Length: 170
Image (cartoon, rainbow, N blue to C red; front, side, top):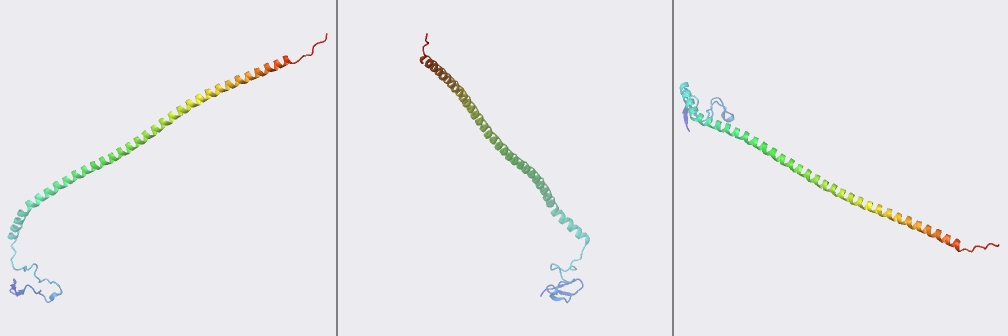
């Protein structure tokens, strides 16, 4: 077993906790990280020098890391702005597609209206022709009726002339 000396002259087993508590839990007399607190005398000047040395050793790297993190943050902001712009472009493209769909739908309905107009003009022409034909047929029928009526009158007139008239006695 290893025994270490404490600052007050007592021998301490570093593996066995002190203070009579046994393995139940740590006490104030237990050794942190394997070194007793009283083993090295604390000198404020040395602590300051060690702290300054430690800071001098790690501070430039930490400052460089801080600058790198700031640069990364700025780059992230730029990337987020660029991403927002790209998203807006995609939304614009979608709206353009919607507009294109509306234009194609408008073109479809325009063509449909043009076809209906052509059909209406064709029907108008046909009805005009039918009206003219009906008028001609009506006129022919009237002429035929007139001719038939005149023929009947002539036939009646002829029959009247052909009928024997009694002779007048003189």
